Length: 93
Image (cartoon, rainbow, N blue to C red):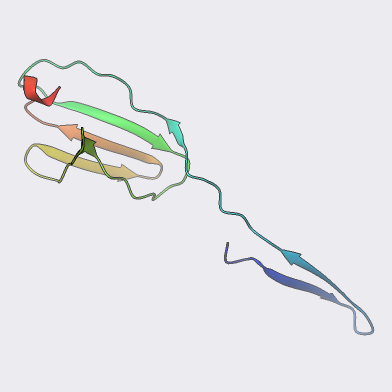
């Protein structure tokens, strides 16, 4: 987007100008979350892939925002975001 501007080709006696408008690409899911099953007491990893690397991700359970803790771990590298849930219990479903 920062490349948007007017560009000029100058040959001394004449100039030609054009305006470049760079549109931001919307961030999309390249791979959406998949349903998972896990045995109680184990850990489960939920993974989604985004179209733009480094996109901030907020993980939620229902309407509750999750925060990193002994229970929840977040990883993000490139376009991949992961949520690891440790020691799953039936209330985590």
